[in-house]
Amino acid sequence: MSPTDDEVPEVLLRPGNVEDAAALARIHLAARSAAPMPASIHPPDDVRAWLAARLASTDEVWVAAVDGEVEGEPVGYLRMTSTWLDDLYVAPAHAGQGIGSMLLDLAKSRRPDGFSLWVFETNHPARAFYRGRGLVEREHTDGGENEEGEPDLRMSWEPARAR
Image 1 (cartoon, rainbow, N blue to C red):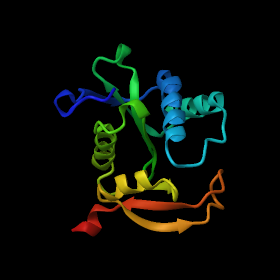
Image 2: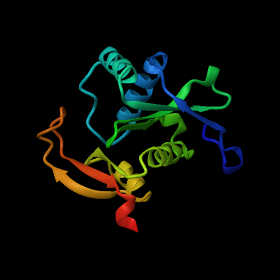
Image 3: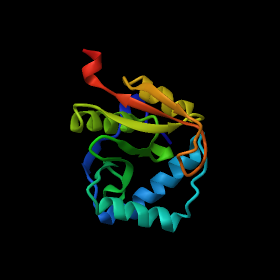
Image 4: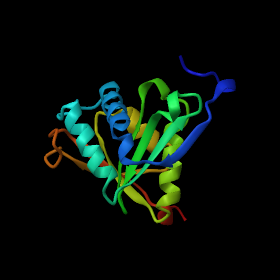
């Protein structure tokens, strides 16, 4: 069940940690499965281990938790490097509640000089989401450089160009 406009959930954004890996893997896999994009080619245990490694690395990870969820269980997350937004996923049950926008706004505030991201060409909802929030499509590929071998595109948020 989705909240009505009067019932918008209270969202806490906090830095992620290694203990979040299992929850973030669930979000990652569920969101990918629900989106019009290629299925993950990695089994859940590999995704969990990969995210745990990213959480322990220099990547910056932020978690969105909704007030009232079991012990602040994550419902979305973003993962960034110094110049890339590598992951922004929201659990399908919490989609459309503004959580993705909050995470993207956080990424913009943490990377005020801009950043890029990759999105699959078939993921029209994600492309529209990012376009509607100021990102621009910069480069289209045939997918030869990604694991799935599917066409994708680089989008970027470049605030200096908007001035």
